[in-house]
Image (cartoon, rainbow over all chains, first blue to last red; front, top):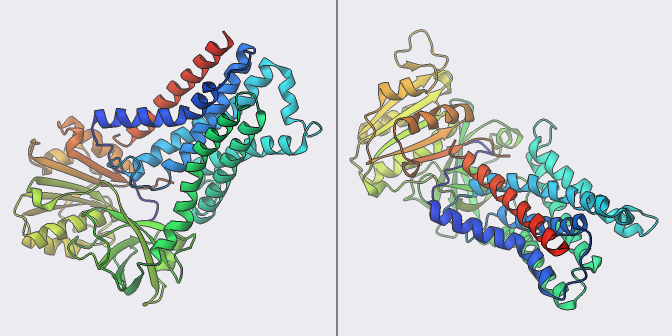
Length: 448
Length: 30
């Protein structure tokens, strides 16, 4: 699986989703509630009061952004980090809007608030406000258009974390110094404690977590090129039992002497779950980091943070399964198939494996070998087939699904993993076939 | 499709939170 290749279905159920959204909303609204609990000052003009509330809400949303993106397993378990990041992406745009609307609404309500942006009134205060406005805009622009701006993932990640930390810290300082709703010492302490938690969690994820990884080193023991401009890496645990994972999950990989590195990328485990001490990764060479992986020396120290992901299957469940994958999206499914083979699963399975050309089929021989020991029907689909190709051609669409798959039934699960155009075609087609959301598991490329 | 749900939820929750902030500001201003 290539870097920046994450996302899986939001599948924990409606009740759990609504409960989580209520908890999230309560946490985001907490700064506003804290400000309103103490002695309330005399009311001001309508737009001024609305502007003040937008500012407090903005602080809450920005602080929760740090938690949403922190890969904390205890936070929203079962939703998938990838879905949380999609949510984070939307609420980030909302945070930008709030940070912009907060001063604008105040100034429209009372022109005296222009003084907050006037360096002649207070240099530090004015610079801090202007910095936050620019920083939040930079966060938004660099996240939405990272590739168009030519920013590498590593530079973007460092910039994002640094600016986020500064924006929330300055936002907290601003809310404490304004001294309107936060005039009381109890309110100040409560606000500071509330916002300190996400700030500390950010530091935990960037400083403490890599430090803990130092206790569990890995070493690169094998590396080989594969068809389709991919490479295979085999990592061995050094002095520990390895990493237990479910087939289909992924881990964040760092290679080099220290886990404190900007180069940390997510890749699916391709090996069977029964061998947690020897993990295999098949990686498409699509960027600077993945190109560099093809040259990294055997014996290099490695660090793995994980496992993550809800795109998983239980081989022991014995359910019939359809896999629909495109390109290097085969890797999590390969782990599932190998785990099924090791357990001696007998249920019927179908694999639709789409690639551009025949020479881009990364795991063709390995999949064919697995089909000998599993009840697995493999359907290769090529978009650019050679003249002598006998298999399916074109894109994976509703017609192809109708030709190659059995009638849908409640005992069939579907796993879909591939690039966005394929997902956009396959997911609605499966829904039209009557596949419920609970049986449809999917994972796609290009999150950031 | 299914992945868009998380984004839709982010948008819906944002609109709801914005409405709450405006309503509270309105209520305070009397």
